[in-house]
Length: 165
Image 1 (tube, rainbow, N blue to C red):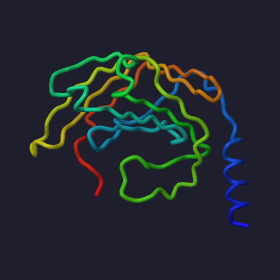
Image 2 (spheres, rainbow, N blue to C red):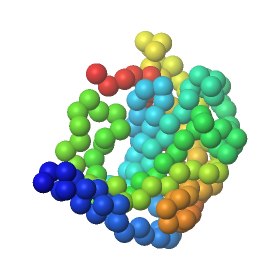
Image 3 (tube, rainbow, N blue to C red):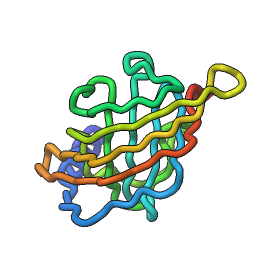
Image 4 (cartoon, helix red, strand yellow):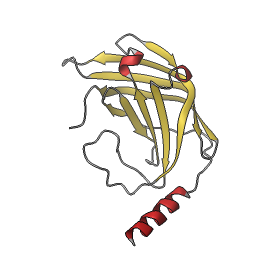
């Protein structure tokens, strides 16, 4: 019986509605992050998130300002925008599983845009602050073939170089 129920739930989740997003998506706040290096933030009602993974070593990130064209660094710069069926909570840099009942409805992956980034080392020498600006970000949902354009998004003084635990 349990296997049948799991199968029904998986089938039902696979059929959740997609939605064409139009207009501007505004991700609020300065953002947060962890590791070497991920960053994230939510929109105002927490029904959408943007998650960024950067391969710090391959990109040679440092205190020197750098600019990257995302399509040239697809393995080292990954940006995913996710829409949920209700407000979600931080499940990106946490030791504890989320208790959120939010279900992921749709995800878009970045195909183009630019990243301007600078790191500043903190006193301990291991962690750092990240200032990153994405311009003309274009993300694509392969399921619905929907494109979403985000003209500008900034991550300000995001703490990186630390790991949950």
